[in-house]
Length: 277
Image (cartoon, rainbow, N blue to C red; front, side, top):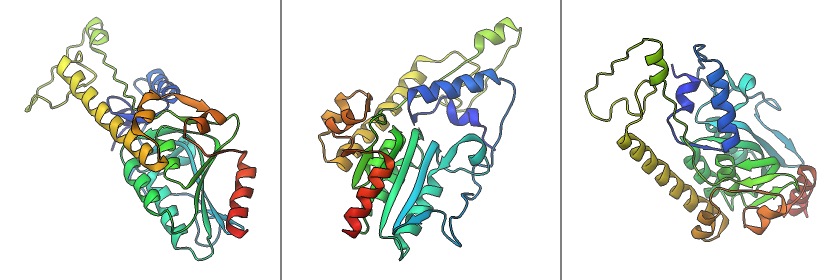
């Protein structure tokens, strides 16, 4: 069973920095209290019909992409604001095959989340372009991993106070070796393989471990930049030069990260008009 802390610390995240810090503080305040979740459980989203896990209005399937995004979410979704890429993909594939669905609206309001599963889902959405119209309708923001998913759509709308961007990677590492020393506790880590248990939380971070983790972050960051550049049809250097900045409303349009500034209701109306004429 994997703890929430293990999914947060010492691994790269495609997550808005403010959310990463918020989660880190939450875990820190609850030190010693272990929270576990059945991450591999099936997606529990309620159905909006007899067999549809999404709402369909005037031929448009509305797929919610909200909260912190994780590879596989289970029973913790409703309690902690997690959404699983597995659940999003299941809804997306079902909507593609659904005869009453004429267009797919990704209803996005998320700071991003885990790397695992994100690139595959973004590629899946991108590969479906041309089969049915796909719009990403932000309500309010799409940052980092959430923006990666939104960028795979044909059109992105953002409210005037909404945000796009944060095309970057962050990792948070904590270690408690000094606190253990002060408490008179000695922890001995025995390993077979020099890189086993690297960057753990009971030993000072070794220089090589830091370099290895930074190399992983850089590699993921470059893949993220390439994905956004491909999806949005803009130069990769322009995305890289943003340095993971976030942009409000029309500034996202100016930087090629969105197409129109519109409230969610207005964007849905525009989407309906584009489909039905």
